[in-house]
Image (cartoon, rainbow, N blue to C red; front, top):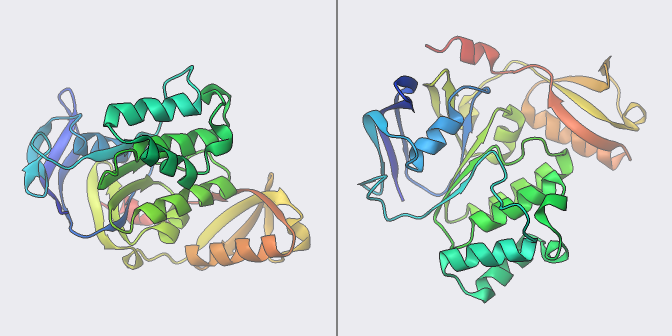
Length: 281
């Protein structure tokens, strides 16, 4: 599959939000659409699914415009798009009928996403992490070859976020996955390439190693951290660590949990790409 974005601009009403974007995606994998809140990530995803008209340029998938494309798209919005009042079982069966897939395929997805124990629970009674798993699972019904995931780990704790990312990695072996985030640590852990936006402009497109940072500061909220680490400062409820790169964050978290610490939250205390974004045109 190939996705070509050529001189593409779009927005809402007469207000342009995305400005003359150009990038190419031509192989399976996870592509992180990175940017601060308001950078244009959700607008790009809505445009790629055909929800927004183009002001200039085009988006083509395998040579076809969005209205002509024969590629089925799995779209997970930043809100959990699950009908209220249904059980998990009813939700999965409903979307299975909509997509015209077999009961066997639904059972396979339920097993893959560890939903068996949730089947008879009402969706409204689920935790945020459980709802996200159900939302992601129902988005994959029909084995679509293009996945567009809008901040799928937002507001989830680190353990659940890691589980969601692991599930997404499994899906990316033969699919193109577009995954939006404002978190550089998450991007470095998950993505192979980055499409970085700032104020609706494309400021970087390429391998994630091309994003250079001089320092990286994270805050960790949890229990027992003071017994498992040194060289930290305290900021409110957070133990603050200054690191050389996002890659060091994964090593630190592994070290803390191995020493018995319980981690409730990992938070970027400053945006290491702030200068990168501010320098963008």
